[in-house]
Amino acid sequence: MLEKIMDVTNTICGLPLTIFIICAGIYFSYCVGFFQLTHIKKLWGLTFGKLFKKIKKGENLKEDPSYKTIATVLGGTIGAGNVAGVAAAIAVGGPGALFWMWVIALFSMATKMVEVMLATKHQQKDKNGNRYGGAMYYIKTIGGKVAKVLAVIYTITLLIYVLCDSGFVQINTIATSLQDTFGIALWPIAVVVGILSLFVIAGGLKRVSYTLEKLVPFMYATYIILALIVIFANIANLPAALALVVKYAFTPASAVGGFAGSTVATAISKGAARGIFANEAGLGTSTTVHATTTNDPVTQGLWGMIEVAVVSFMVCTISGLLVMTTGAWSAVSEGGAPMILYAFETLYGQVGKYIVCFVLVTFCYSTYIGFFYEYITALGYFANEKWKNILKWTYAIPAVVAVFLSIDVVWDLLCDTAVGLIVIPNVVALFLLRKEIKKTFAEGKKKLA
Image (tube, rainbow, N blue to C red; front, side, top):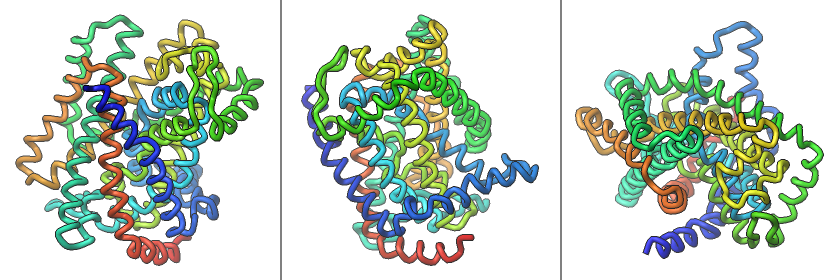
């Protein structure tokens, strides 16, 4: 029964969803004048470029609201999907899966921009003047009963997605990584995870932001540097690896070593599915964080573009090239973390398993606590302040249960199904708001320095 459900899920959330997302990305790219291609220099200058100017002037970077926002967003976005998920996609879809991740990312930058732009424009304020918002609030502005129903559907799917991704995928990865590396039994991990969950929930959103501001730069730099060292150690294999990525994006990949072979359709669907899961463009999830900023909608939308670029073109690409240049993609029959482990061990030996464990645990924990923003926002849409404060404690329950679940069920059933459910209502709403998107972008573009 479970296999049949998974087959249906893979069909619906495979090629059809890929085509849907790519078409949406192309259309929204048109709405913003393909800004991600035509204004690359300005895109950088108005986002990270400004932050680097603050560093040169000696200003406190961590007091900048843009830094706090992007640190929180990246903390929630960079997780198991950017490391083990990329390797898993290549294990099933072949090297061509990485190419289709790039395609998805290129056009999804525009999708992310417009959803962040609308969320910032339609942000709400509580009685204390604190900003909050998300996709459900701009969906509601469409008007009529359809909009209200669509907003409710989106919010429910957001809750499902958050619990599946953060509560199951990320925590399950933490548990399996610690067990495989140190031989720790699952029940002590469940206890520790439960305590850490309660710690985050008790501290609220301020504790989430503070933790991610400290954790994200360190974990990100550690992984990038150590992975790049491995890639440069195998630099002679890089041209051939890139050639395979392009070749097998358009032709079936034959079986080699531990790789069983794949079709072009599989490469597209797996690359796209993991690409969407990695950068979350079209899901509207990170809008709950972006909506708390004081920036104008278009400027904040540019930060949304940068978010996709960092996640997909940097972290995911490095993960993909890591398993390609070291030969892990064909040497290891089991995808995901084992491939990453093999790649690190080619250079670091036994230390490699500790590196992989550190990367997966920190990436996954940052995603888990980062998604608390989405969970609280979704609860707040249905419940008043009193009930929201009561229900928020349920965030810890799936995390404890996830420790004991099968990884196949977590990734294929829970994760991919949740992605499919949440994308559709959000992208449909964005299309219905296309006139507002074009108008808001046109007005905001004039103000860009």
